[in-house]
Every structure is written in structure tokens, then in C-alpha cells.
Image 1 (cartoon, rainbow, N blue to C red):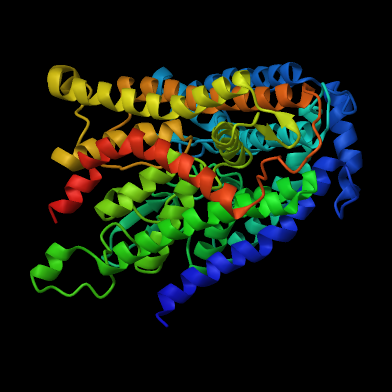
Image 2 (cartoon, rainbow, N blue to C red; image 1 turned 60 degrees about the horizontal axis):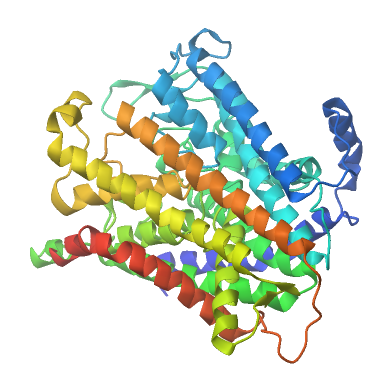
Length: 568
């Protein structure tokens, strides 16, 4: 077997094998059961006392959301201030200056929504201080926010009839102390052992093979890279992200980082089944997500390993596949695997340049984010799938002439309206944003030129670059087709608005649906109850998701990625 393919298979098997026990552990953490990390309870009690939080105080869904939104507003103000004045703050040995207001707005919003879309170069756009006290801090807090929201939804659905869904602050702290921090320490130690920098020295002067002198950035990269992957954050410590040899130096670090991206989202699908004591339902959800993921991996690995047919037509050998924009130490197959892994989640880190992938690979990357339910970001990915479960249950109930029910609670018009708004908002903000950008590019060339120009590629690929940017923003992913010049007023503000809408409107709606369902009278299962833990219902949910995505996005792909593919 080709060693590159073997490496892809081993990574996927490793993720699946480890996701099951981790999912079981996560369920125990959120249910308050005994775990191996109970020794951190004194630290947690100290945090609760310092914050004035009573972890035993139950919240209804409105109080839960109020706490979630208020804390994020606080972090937005915190991040904006520090990013603008970072040039005068300590831990700045390289003398990096503060960000402009519009760039700080985009950066702060991006990291606050667990996206990490970067309109700056990592090592020169930030100082060590803001890397630690804005970027890394947000990577823990925002990941934990998504996980806490899912924990609240699980608690609501597990109860027969209840007005409360748990305590947001408790779920937030547990997500950090019991899950994110321990895993980050393990991954961080591996990265340090493999040569990823971890210190506070300034740039290092090195001599290149050509005999030239080059200044190479260092800093606390290992700690930030670990949580950027595990928290599905994805921001690059270095400008080249995980294709940089100091951020991802070896094939082992490449495997560990790729594993880290997907392990928690995979585990949360299992955790849902364990938490509700409905393992079969958890397995069904996991199976649908895994199927979609593997299809994407198969397409992208094949596309990247076979390369560009135009080059073959010229009689030039492509022994390594489509290697433009990729690192030789990583290879085309591992690049194809990573491109799917990072886009089925809201991670956005890259070990190769997505702008250089084959057109159909780019289509898969964008479809993963446009569908936004295959594993997804930590917590919120499963919640997006939950939205489509509600829609599928409602449609299935109408088809058989029975009031739709999910986990013993009636799904009625109110919940269906909220779910529909969430499902349609995603394509709306992507397509409206892309249409506006395309209109300005064609009809306001003076404005575009004033901003330094946007596109380095014309025609179909230029449209793909703009479509990808808004897709990545709406999905809170953060990767990009880097032929787009995006550090401008238009892109910083427009993407920032899309980032906010793509993050908080779905969370508010999904938590609201769970809270509303939880209040309803519990209906025991009967012979006429629609089973949601079967392969048939899994196929039904997949079909609903695919149809919504196809109707929304295939027309624009016909003008971008598909059209580009047909020109090869």
C-alpha cells in the first residue's frame, strides 16, 4: 500500500478509536460523575469563589444565554483594547506595532467567535503579550463556550420535564479544567519534544543555505498551537500556519495536530449518546457525520495525489501529486486529509495552501463549511446537526400524519420556525456577502483599487476566493483562499459582521429550542413513536442537510469551482 495512503488511514483510525473513550469521559464530566481528574476540584472551587459564582445554581435557558452573551461582550472589549495598544505593552521583543481599529475589530471578533480568521501575518501582526492574553486566552474561552452550550442542550434533552438547563459558568469551567487544558498539555509536550518553539526570546538570526542572513520568529508557539487545534480555533502562530516548519516540523507533529483538530468534535457525538443513555442515537449521529467526512477525504486525497491533468497533458511527471502550495515533508495525501479535517470542523488551520488545491478539492472544502454540520466546532458542530434533526423529525412526522416528537417532547411550530431560521441564515449571509463583494468588484473598481485591489486571480477562481472568505466567516472556520487581499476596511468589517451572525444566532436559537422542548410534558415512547436512532432516520437527516446545501450553494459553485474544474 502507498505509504501516504497508509498514513491517512492510520490517522483516521486513531481518531475514531480514541473518540469513544473520550466521549464517555466528557459525558461523565458534564453529569458531575467521578473522573480521574477530580483532584482539580479545589482549583475549580477557588475559581468559583473568586468569580462569585454558585455552580449549583440552576439556570433556565434565558439566564443561560444571558450569561453566555455577556461574558463574550466583555471579552470583545478586552481584546479590542489590547490589540490596539499592543505596541506599548510588555513581551514585545520584536517591536510589533498595534493593530488598526478595523483590523483589531476583525481579529477580536474572529477569535471571540472561535473562528481565528486572520487578516494579518501571525508572527508580525501580534506581540507575545497579545498572543497569550488575547489569542490563547480566547482559544480556551471560546472553545469552552461552545462546549458549555452543548452541555446545556444535553442536560435539557436528558430531562423528562424541566425549566432549567444547568449552570453556564460551571459547564464553562469544567470544559477548560477537565477537557481542554489536560489535552493541551499532552499535545504541547509532544510538540515541544518534536522541536516546536516554546519561549519568549525575540527573533533568531540564522544563515540560510544560500549564505544569506534571515531573522526567524520564535515565541510560545507550542502552547498556542496545541489549543488552537484542540479547541477547533485554527489561528496560525506563524503566517504560514501549520505548513510552517516551526509550527509543524515533522510528520509526527502533522499527525498529532490533525488528530487534535477532530478528536473533541468526534468525541462529543459519542458524549451525547452516553449523557442521554441513548448510545444508539449517538452512534447514528456519529455514523452520518463520519460517512460525510470519509467521502470528502476520499475526493480530496484522490484529487491532490493525482494532480493537474493539464500538466499530465504536457508530458510532465507529477510523482508527488499536486504539490504546488504544499510542503514536501508532509505530502499531497496528508494535505488532502488535513484540508477536509479542518473544514468539517471550525478549525481553519492549514498544512498546505487551500488556494492551491484542485478545484474539486476547493469545492469540498467550501461545502464542508457551507453544510457546517459534519462534526463542526467543539460543541456548536453537534448543535448545528441538532437543528437539522428537529427539521427532519418535523418533516417525518408530517409524512406519517403524526405529531412530531424528539426524545419524548413534541416538536411544534415554534421550534420549527427557529430551526428554519437557523438553517437558512447560514446560506443567506454567505451568498449575500459574496454577491455584494462581486458587485463592488465589477461596478466599483475605484473603491476596490483604493483598498489595494482584492483578487490576484481572475474569473472563476476569483469568485471562489470571495465565496470562500464569506463561507469561512459564516462557518466560523478561519481558513482562506489566500489569493484574496483581505486586510481592508470592507473585508475586515463585512467578515466581522458575518462572523458574529454565524456564531451567536445559531447558539441562541439552538439553546432556545432545547429549553422550550425541556419545558414540555414528557410523552413516553409508544409503538407509533418515530425512532430517531435508526439508520433510516440517519439517512433522512442526511438527505435534508444535503438538499438544503444543494439548493443553496450548487448554483454559485457552478460559476466558480465546478466551472474552473471543467476548464482543466
